[in-house]
Image (cartoon, rainbow, N blue to C red; front, side, top):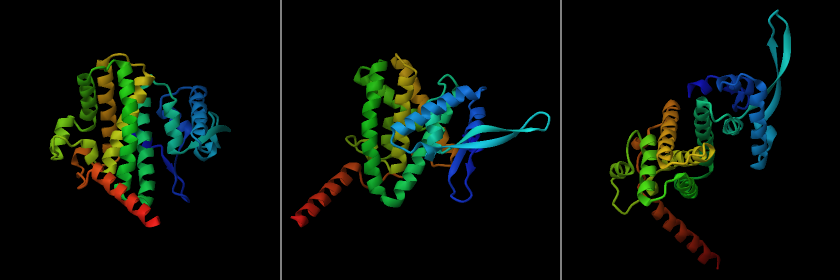
Length: 275
């Protein structure tokens, strides 16, 4: 999403990325500051409800602007972190197409940073277990949203899931991905993904659920299309950020089930040693 990359600023001392609300307002097509500031206020509330310090993500700043006759005037502005921007576009006008693009961009950016931060502390196997567990939880929530939209029968849900994969994997279905990974019939593709691939699928799931609920989609055909559209947008964002396409990522040697067994054995071994 070059539009949002072009207005990104970086603090020269800390290296932290931030965006000015006034510039983001223009990028998102808001003609009036008042309407955009309403979205920011809702985002501040969401930030506080999530347990974060609001001032860490929304810093009030003043900016001097040049008036028509050469005079200058100070106006209100806000420096926002990528998470602050993410919350803001989540609370923005859903009727604006660019809002959906912004939601995907800042969601992917935020999650990429989270994973980068986790990488410092967790090895790849543990990251896989953590993201896979989170994905399982969100897949259940996605299934509930799809059911409310009209995706009722098992075959309908299989088609719904395939549309999401096709968007995210450049047209590949779950069966195609299964074959590319050389898996046995009984093996699940999600159990044979690395943390990066799992994280992209997590975004697909969370953003699709949000889109279905936000737009109050009430037909399986529209739910299918929404899933595919979100998959495509996540894929496009990964491409624009210079990431590897998911179908080209390597398949881990160990499955999630193997890692879970090893993790359980380690816990049991530690327990025996302490008794």
